[in-house]
Structures are given as C-alpha cells and as structure tokens.
Length: 367
Figure 1 (cartoon, rainbow, N blue to C red):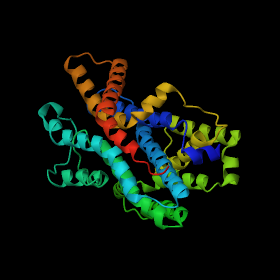
Figure 2: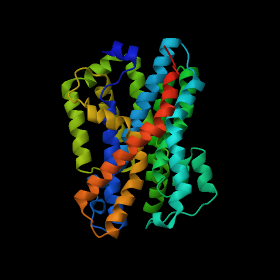
Figure 3: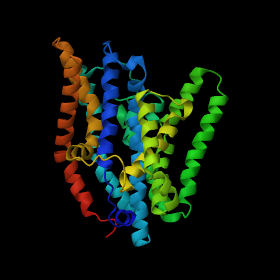
Figure 4: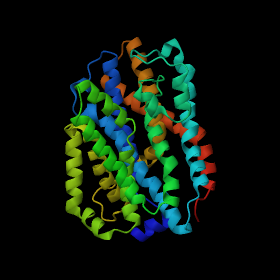
C-alpha cells in the first residue's frame, strides 16, 4: 500500500474528509448568522456549534499540510529536486481565481446597501484591500479589518504564507522534520508564555486571537505526518494503523467535538494532532476502519473550496429573504443554505475554477 501511494500519489478518503470540514464550518455559520439577526440559535449556547466551525478550519489546515508536503516530498524523491516555480504557479492557478473573484465582489457588489450586515466591520478603505490583495487576510483579521462576506479567506492567507516557504524548505533543507517540529514547539512555548504572563483575560484573548490567525502549527502537524510516512517510519505507523489505535483516536475526537470540549490555549494544536492522525489513517492505511469513498462525498470534496468561499453569501441571502417575506423556518433555512451553496460551488467549479485547473493539470511537476 505504501509503495502504491509513493508511486501514484493517490490518497483515498480525503475528498470526503474535505467536504466534512466545509460542512461543519457551514453549520457553525448557519447558527452564528441566526444569532446576528437576533433569532434563536445554538451558537450562543456554546458547545458543539461554537467550537466546530474553527475546528473545520483546523482540519483544512492539517489536510493541506499533509497533501502539499506529500506532493513536494514525492517530487523530490522522484526527480531529486523541487521545481519551486512550477509549484507556485500551480498553487496560483488553484487558489487565486476564486479568491480574487470573491474579493472583487466584496469590494464592489457587497458594498451595496442590500448587503448591509448587522455586524460591525472596521472601516479601512485603504489598508484592508491592500492586505487582502497581497494574501495577508489573516493579518487584516488581527486588526478586525473585514470586508463583507470575505472574512473567511483569512485561512487561505495562513496556508499561502506557509506554502511560500514549503518548496524552498524541501528543496534546500535536509532538516525539514526539525523545522516543522520547531514551528509546533515555538507555538506551544509562546502560547504558554502569554497565558502564564497575562495581565488580564482581555489581553490573553487578544494574544490568542493573533496566534489563531497565524496557525502555522496546525499545517505543520499535517506536514509532519506526511514527512514521517514518506520517510517510511514503519514502526510508528504499525502502532498508529492498529485497529485499537484507530478506535481510540476516532472515539476521542468525535466525543470531544460532539461535547464541544475546549482545550484552553492549545485548542487548535490538540485537534490538529488528532486530525493529522486520522488523515494519515484515512489516506494511507489499507485497513482503515472508516471509509469516505462515496461518489457524492468525493464530488462535494472536489468543490469544497467553493463551498467554503460562497457559503457566507448564500446564508446571508437566504436568511435575509426569509425574514423579509416572514417565512423563516430552521429546517428550510438549512436545506436552502446547503443546497444553494452546493449549487453555487458546483457552477463555480465548472465555469470559473475548472478552466484554470485544466491548465494546472497540464503542468506536470514530475512524471
């Protein structure tokens, strides 16, 4: 199994997992928007709905770290080198078209009075567009500079910033594993420092807010397991792939999320570790106890980027129109929001993203 993966770079189940990550983010925002519009909701009650949205993003981070470093490591193994420019070009073709399409809408169409959102957005007509245009949306989020219906792209900034370094690291460094471990260790130590030395709860929350907008450690966890797998650390995976270990990891993860457990300052890191262990099992373990290889899940996983990018717009439109015509119903709200988000993402994938993906797929990093 490992040899097949190393040869073909095929990872089963991850499309389905990518959709699940997008789905929990959507659920989180469905309840959050109900609260913003002063409707009864589960977001204000805390628990599962409160934590699951951010954990969906953490899952995206871990997935991205695992996949991108797997591609880079396989390329280096096959060719003895890393084609940095081609890597950047392929990333641009995948991410930028939809990213800048949503950004342009946010700076133009979404400024109209119809899209006025009953929530405060920091005014920054100059700095905000500059930060977003240069792939620094997470820095903008640190200062609460948000563009209507574009705030979700903060996570893309985190990924793109680390991906700028990733191919250089794989190409020129023989200590990739140490670098990834250093990212995790520095994050853990700095969070402990700010937690122990905090002057007030408000200051601690501010520091944590900054750290969570630069969650490189979550990507590093996924990359760490990709590196270990490609280095063929068979003893570790013999333990991790054991059915009992899988049951324990899945059980603890599902129960923790279902109960809305919050692990204080290390919330993101603990879940990133759990998700990374699940990812490597789903992708690389031929005796994995869970399967997400379903045609529907695979398709929804392929359009998950669009699901993530379009869902705030769709949720707002559905909720506003239902309230305007006095026909709000939670089940209908969920059905319409999910259904129209899938429709929008599917159309976008076919007509906006796919032309660029065809170009990207012609660019072979390795043969």
